[in-house]
Image (cartoon, rainbow, N blue to C red):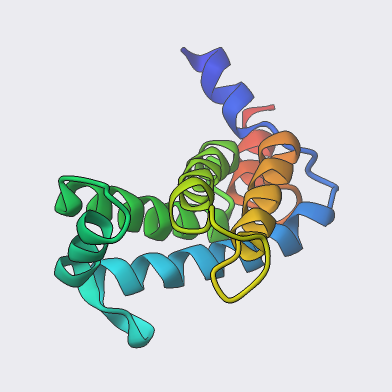
Length: 147
């Protein structure tokens, strides 16, 4: 079990490349999740999001899927911001973005309903799955303290 946790948090402590990805992706995902869950930043909140998921996207039960998506975005984003369990959090956000691409954005590539934004967030998530949290992450701190 300890070896699996060590692999999960392993990262190149000296690499600064993932930091920009983590901070931007984490901020975007946490904000989008708070829109869905709490109605922050002009969002509609959980009940309205659940209705949209059920009525427009065919994701039923809407409340379940809206809670899952909002929680994945919000908590995954917070974990990315601090760089804790970065690979797990990035996998989480990648799955959320893949579902968004296949459901809400599948009709077109470009705006206004296109998938290019969700695809960009998906690609950022995949990059973080591969790289880990990098420098200035909780993962890097925990990796140093275990050696």
